[in-house]
Length: 49
Image 1 (cartoon, rainbow, N blue to C red):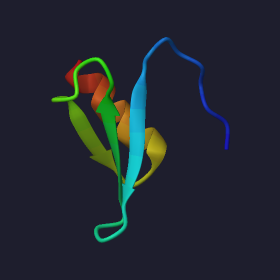
Image 2 (image 1 turned 135 degrees about the vertical axis):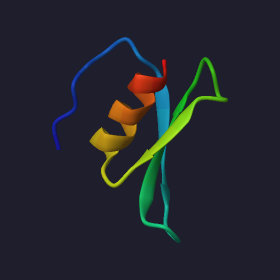
Image 3 (image 1 turned 90 degrees about the vertical axis):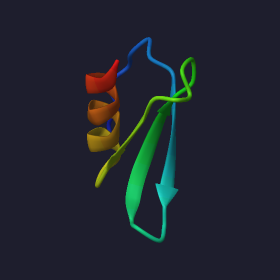
Image 4 (image 1 turned 30 degrees about the vertical axis):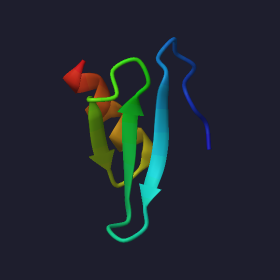
């Protein structure tokens, strides 16, 4: 899998019960977003910032 390099810092976890990836901003942990793929979760997180 190819990832774009950015200056953003976030964590990714997989919710195995719902089969969704959750991206959380490291500087602002109250910001999080979900997606079916890692890319979707990160893109959804970026729209919140």
